[in-house]
Length: 171
Ligand code: S3P
Image 1 (cartoon, helix red, strand yellow):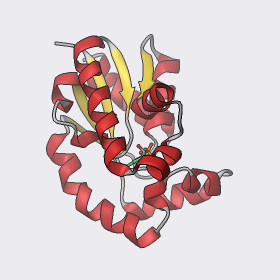
Image 2 (cartoon, rainbow, N blue to C red; image 1 turned 180 degrees about the vertical axis):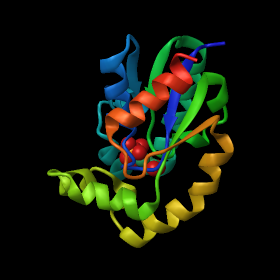
Image 3 (spheres, rainbow, N blue to C red; image 1 turned 30 degrees about the vertical axis):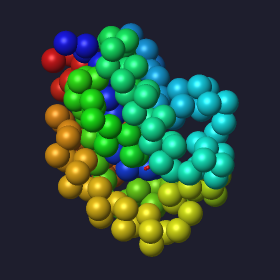
């Protein structure tokens, strides 16, 4: 077993922030699927969508997932919101869903000092109603693939990170 932990969940739910909080509290390296895609293609996620389309981005996610399942161990992996669809997801490690309602996620993004930048770098958040529909479509699918579901509603980063450390990492 690889002992990796894979954080999944909708755009803006806080996967990257939670991963950084966990890494700062315990000795575990954190990598992010979008960061790997950006460094292997030399383009931002936004530019990949604009220049090559979403299906090319999904191909890159699948390639990254295969590499992760064969090469990573003891790593905390944060992922883009659509990464959960890769076939080999459960082979990569224990899948932890960060869960919250669409309204809570959107509220949280808007409360951030860089809210507009956060929305702008996410092509699938360009249209609010389309993002809401995507959330409704994905919500049950996230739960189907998750080994553990962590409710993040009205909780601090510290509290969420601690739950994952106690219930998943130190278990
Ligand atoms: C996507 C989420 C994004 C990024 C890309 C597609 C998605 O990552 O991978 O824009 O399909 O939900 P975040 O979840 O970090 O925003």
